Amino acid sequence: MKYVIALVFIVFLSCQTYATTILIYHKIGDSRTPTTNVSIKKFKQQMRYLHDNGYKVLALKKVVSMIKNHKELPKKSVVLTFDDGYRTVYKNAFPVIKKYGYPATVFLPTEAIEKRYPDYMTLNQIKTMMKYGIDFESHSYSHPRMAYKPKNWTNKRYKEWITGELTKSIEFFKKHFGYKPYAFAIPYGEYNKTVIDTAEKAGFKIILTQDPGSVSIYTPLYLIPREPILGKYWSTMKHFKEVLNEEYLPITKRMPDFGLIKKTPTVIGAKLMFAKNYKNCGVYVSELGWKKAKIGSNGLVLIKNTKNFKRKKDRIAITCVDKNTHKIAVNFWMIINSN
Ligand SMILES: [Zn+2]
Image (tube, rainbow, N blue to C red; front, side, top):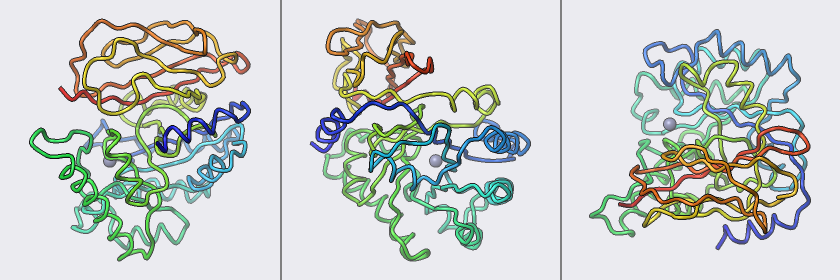
């Protein structure tokens, strides 16, 4: 119900297009795990690029408050987030962001901190960063894959398990840092409606995914996309500049909606909030690829599908070109195949 109310409300607001890209980093300067790493050199280059090109690096909380109050976002802005609380972030990223005075948010899977896993930040390192204003929020307790309910589990047991993960993480924050985290970054960025609902019930005000894309004042706070910067291709300056240029595509209806699907959808797409502002749209599905789609009557952008989905999860996206800015606007969500 909450989703419906949020969508209906934003339909009545006027159109604007400025977007903020929320970047996710994992490890900085850890060559043992190249797929989740960004080299120190590249990280420095990216932070310098933001500075030299007039990007405002905003605190996550600030962007959230602007979205909540439907306040125009700055023309060029980003948010820095770091998932998992790796020690290399303390060692190699913290000195750089301190130099520029950038705010940042680190999402902690609290079990790794509690049990002092060697690759993760220590409590003292976290507290040192907090003194400089770095924000720490929840990334669950044990970093499990949350979107797949084991077949032999009841819904009740499944919800209790997610609640347990979140509660244990919240308790850790209260005990060691004296506050309740307001933001939850979903482990692996994998979600369904139960994951989202349970996180909201646990008291999280915003929920962050790893769906690509930027945010605008139309982005729902329970499904905040972030752009991963990592690995060989996604840490390049080319990709970095591309994601900074993306816009958020406001939609009022997803078809199918995010989360669990019982059977493969035959019609896939979305309803655009401001259809007149866009052209050259397409629909992307992980296992179908990208397909052109016309903007139909009522702003619907749809493709027909006859292929049976085989993957456990698929990402769906609508992409369009903004007629005014000529930038690409995207809106991604995730479906989980229950079969
Ligand atoms: Zn993670």
